[in-house]
Length: 521
Image (tube, rainbow, N blue to C red):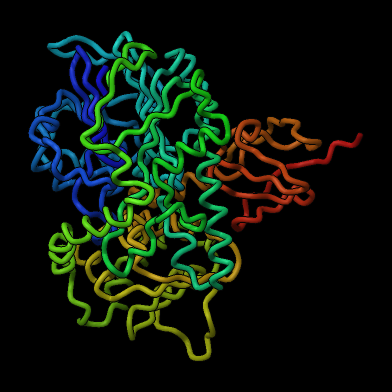
């Protein structure tokens, strides 16, 4: 098996039974904020795109690059489709001209066959609202000699199913870096923001190391790492010189963490550096050879700042062209179109609107609109209404662009761009961001139903002197594997949510109480 990194979470997997192109992303995404790091625009995309199979893990723009898929990928490739409850991914690929699909069943081994032979694959599909009803997924590929698990930025809650069906994993590709806007966009004191960022940075790397231990692969390739932020107003987001307050550590940093914490022991687990264009050949767990397009150190450490300067100059015209395509900032008031968009969604989402539970302010230049979730209305601010518990300041041109383009997901457009600011009084509100992901009837119906469905939390575990429910109240991760207890505080490392064990109260968000009891000696 030959594995070639094609940038970010993208890989080209060549086997005797055919080639699989995974998550090719090249064009700047999220309102031109994110660019693949290192640069992958000069790879041989004609050859890479002439693949037998295509796997797109989910619809986030750093995985689903519509322009690149349309222009550079063979439309006769067989698409390996995750098992999602909402068919948006399949529809989007059909709109681009893809017409051959293997519709897999979640976490079930499937044999795919073509003119060149057969491969065993399995796609682990995540379908909780935190992943969005459009989903997230990872893929296992077994060519008869080598078994590879491309987890990209999915966060599976049960990895036993992989070992049960495939045995030992030889190569593990996984995310370790941030892909979020928190805490950078929030109006909080600088010192607090730095503390929150350093905690989030370390939590992400801790979670990745936990996955390494659970999967138990011989080779670990850090992937789906940080993008480059090349627009001048966003350059501060890049991690230069291993900044402990950046949530975007790079591959070199994570490989150092693996060695520091013993998850790269040179025997059982081994970290492997790959940059865009790096190609590694495996026979089983044996790395036969690896080649790089340039010495990787040219883009890391003391050379990283100069590399980013070079890339900023290269991509300046591309970013300028994308900005020129945005809707103009000026125009008719935004109240009417936002009312038309949001109120029908509110009417379909009792669980989510009640979970939000308060009005949310949306400040767009000189205009403020209130999303009044308790009353299911979108309205102007009331006199002397005061500061809203949650609010967003977004440039009107960004809002007008997503309205113009009928975007069904503001999280995957505006929020991931980090081109906004926010404030909140109290904890994170998962229901609010779920609402912004689900701006179609299909999506909101699925998400609202998910929250309404009762989940089994009857199974218990004993951990560090406490009896607690086994499954995390957030997304059902196994707390025997992901739970960390410090004093009377439990943190689930899958998403970093925390609980007070003495009361069961969630410290991260509204609701989501935990069942917990102190074990008396």
